[in-house]
Length: 370
Image 1: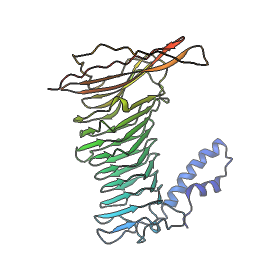
Image 2: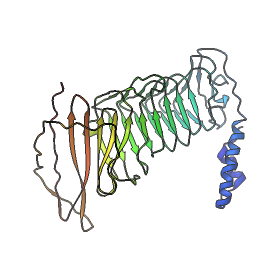
Image 3: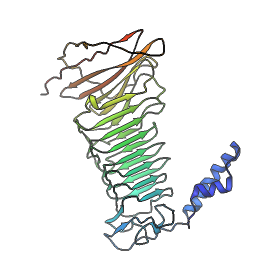
Image 4: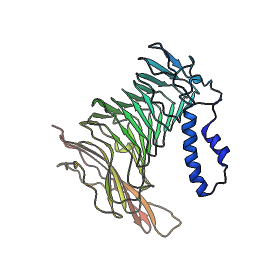
């Protein structure tokens, strides 16, 4: 049986190591990992167009490179049109580089299947993550999809991990993509610029300097205005006023994020934020105190010549708080449409009042597109 790397390292190093020994342990752990990965062979199937089923038959070892995890007893990836299916309750891990494939592999994860990726993985053809499947990617891993990625499931990427998609990325309305920190990145259209689509939820957990970005490589972006959502947790951001790219390098953008589907939490005192569509992408605009001026961007929203007068809210609600002052957030929503670009804003502003808080909603009437 192939020993799990963490268990083997813990057995050798113990659990009460000093910092010096921890550093040694990290080196030994990497050496152990390389040694353990070398015990797997890369025997492939010899028939084109065959479908391999993930079988979880390797006695607790869920490694991708363990051929015992496939129903035919060998690995996919040397001939064209090989298909791998992970079904309900199938659990896989990629902790050893799986880049041996020299031909297209089609991977399908069905409902309930999970895959944890911490090393490099090549999927030469399409990758389908269906409803209720889950993939987590972390470390410095690179997951390469040769053609299209269809996401109707949960995908989380963190640390300095990279996801590379050759053609288009499609997020269904039930998809949830989470990008943690400012080091991870996703790139689509690495082979040919195509039309990527967002109809589900993108959650950004900001790092100290900003967000992990989705780069469309000059491809088109279609946003499903009724179902596409953005959630931003800014509690880890330590900068000031800034223009932070969320999705960039778009040739054209069709649709926009509905302000009602944009949530921004955790901004530092004095900062306000809005999600803005520009000619080349979607940005988080941070304004207010606590930092320098916004960084330069490739484009700026064009002001709409037709505006409506702000309408004050008819109600005022006192807010009880155990501290001396009350802080609340007032949201201003502005929708602007011009022939050059579209601006969609969900603004969160911190207001401090001694006794009562008044929330004013401002609506801007869009100009007619010609």
